[in-house]
Image (tube, rainbow, N blue to C red; front, side):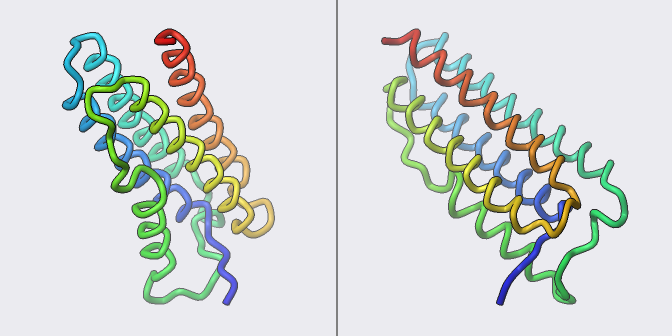
Length: 157
């Protein structure tokens, strides 16, 4: 059975991914010793929280047509499916390398890349042009995370 998801459902998933990222970065911050490293990782957690709020605002701006699901789903199973997918693919049970900033950054970059691939794939599930620009906005936000993480990783080499 083919699924087409609405932009509204994509935003629900994006918010869950950001919440998962907050948990990842908070756990990583707890595992490092240096105050500078803790501060950087907590800053990343704060950025994930800010992105969740951005996605919430973007979701509120959706036109009614964009909020409509593209499939018959009276039990809202597609939203539950998306949540499960977000929980199990991006930042889910990622092993946080203990007290190793380089490995934490590498793991975080991998998760951010996974999220971009996920969103690119999900963009194809949005029928027609409904919400595609907004999904592109999510992808751009995640790309900014990779630039920041990569820059920090290069500083540590």
